[in-house]
Amino acid sequence: MLIIGERINSTKEKVKAAIGARDTAFIANAAHSQTEAGADYIDVNCAVTGGSELQDMDWVLSVIQSEIKDANICIDSPSYLAIEAALKAYHSKGSLMINSISGDEARIKSILPLAIKYDTKLIALAMDDKGMPHTAGERFEVAKNIYERVKKEGFNVENLYFDPLIRPIATEPDQAVEFLKSLPLIKGLTGAKTVCGLSNVSFGLPNRRLVNATFLTMAIQSGLDAAILDPLDNHIISSLRASAALLGTDEYCAGYIGAFRAGKLI
Amino acid sequence: MLIIGERINSTKEKVKAAIGARDTAFIANAAHSQTEAGADYIDVNCAVTGGSELQDMDWVLSVIQSEIKDANICIDSPSYLAIEAALKAYHSKGSLMINSISGDEARIKSILPLAIKYDTKLIALAMDDKGMPHTAGERFEVAKNIYERVKKEGFNVENLYFDPLIRPIATEPDQAVEFLKSLPLIKGLTGAKTVCGLSNVSFGLPNRRLVNATFLTMAIQSGLDAAILDPLDNHIISSLRASAALLGTDEYCAGYIGAFRAGKLI
Image 1 (cartoon, one colour):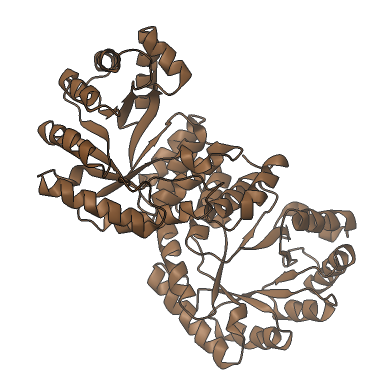
Image 2 (cartoon, rainbow over the protein chains, first blue to last red):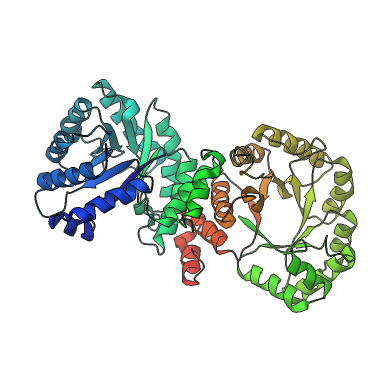
């Protein structure tokens, strides 16, 4: 499981304020704490700071790179200009991921060449100009079209992560099942991997962290390869560690026992 | 999901003492609290009280039946004599379950006629005189033999619940995966259902309730039909409620929201 730490996201008020104030300590701490908690990539979103996204992205990346040697970054932006600027600004030896393309042709045309040029991993949302799919089969069809499209352009599909897009179960009770069913279908596309954010699933319900963590357990069991999540959330840590122990991917249950000793398990 | 409440089990010191002292309030409370928490059946085990199992079973059943109208009982005993006595002593209109047979021929010969005569549900452990199976395939083979054996005798296989027997992941890290893989195989036997106890999975690990609850989520996702568990354990309640909401079996997430309002969710 690849963990993409979601905490440096300008849709969160505190993060937005910290970026606006050029609060180096805040960003440095967010990067360090997530890395120490096991994040493989640090997602950076500066899209809604109210300032210049390009300048903000450049500043956040410079802070992270000066703090963490060869940090792996997930560049998260609706703007291909900001993505391109971030790719140019990144000078470390870590790995890069772009978040995200979809089936939208304009988006593919602007971003795919960057992903190929900079040899990045690439998140592809399973949606197109017809909107978000409902069934597992519809998710697979959209993913398949994107898969064939980017493969034809020469993108290394081993670096392709599909997000089947989870929707709130409070209003659409079949959506977790449809999402989970889509994972093995999409992974049937040779080389393709899967990723998701968690929090939409619990929208409208109380005690959302429990629903998010339980959904994560189910998604891991169904073969999820990566997740965008808060690696400091103890519900999430508990799901990750107990799931790994149960699925035999945590040798001697060492990760589980370590998390217990660190007081991280619920 | 059928919930079998496990709290009235004489292997627990407090229960053993309560049965020995004929502590009616203790047994009544254990029955009421489990029923209110959603137990469909109340497991009754009097095997290790140190007294007479037949007399103890008779007393516990009389207490439960006088407290709860038409209580469903799961009679849990290694002794077919105690099982027979319990079946005779049960005079309510609820449903009965016998816990358990295995592939052991002597056990089948003594208990199967009782299950047929009293039209009970029946738990069958997926083990035989060769011992406990390791792989999913071995579990299925043992279950298939038992299935064919009891079907030939005229037992209604709709009432047959196979326990594939989970083993501790701390010492055998592949055993949760093998167990989970066995569930759809066994459910491929027309009419057959699956059941399990949880606690063995976490033997030897700290914070066992988290591992048990995460395993329960995975087992539910893999199609588990029933579980022997403590319905008052908030980790277990959280797994049950969040899993049902996610799998679309909790209309309007009412059970989940109710558990939240009752302060039961972790």
